[in-house]
Length: 291
Image 1: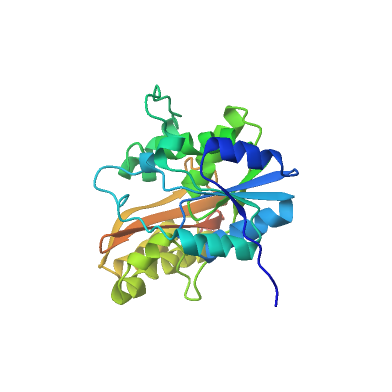
Image 2 (image 1 turned 45 degrees about the vertical axis):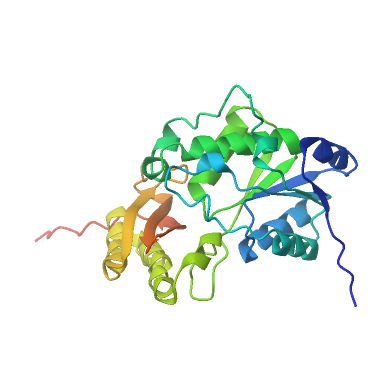
């Protein structure tokens, strides 16, 4: 029988520095908030392929939750998470308390996400991306990885972290990993466990809408949005926050070429995100009558 070795666990910055110093490079970091699923496992496997040492953080970050959001009820499954990380071959797990990441008496310096942090998710959840970027910057400083891996499901988050690493010269390569989905297309998320069976069936409309939009890419941007809206309109139980078509950097949608279609909606009290790559073509203009 194969023996699965338990990764080393650090709960403090001092323990992390000591254990991290004994690990060979290059080092890959996979930041998580725990409640690990197959999507997280895929990130760890991708890190394992790219680096000699894989560090995973398990930390539910309070600063990215707004008032009335689900910080207190966010699933915390530490024992199962550690077992999963052992199975996937993680070398080191950083599992700190809040005071270890945000020490009492700190000056409160944060990372400003700029204008891109105020649209889409940022418009619905003010301050969210300042919390995300701040904790990621802290993790980069604590772990000192050569690369860090994030899922494409949270595409705006991935885009902002890439921009932060580049513009602040943090020296970390940020790698995006494609979204992992259930057989019916629903994007894997730790929040999926909140869904009732009825809500779970309704939530699949998000991925169906994205597929319909992507399929309409050859007809142009307006057709993409119309196709996706039609699918969502057929599921009135989904309360839509936004459906947007952008360029790949989340700027205005191009007239042709690579683009991104992003959606956020609520099934009951559970808020779900998804997105898909779209290739736009300029709509064919009907030829005039030359007679």
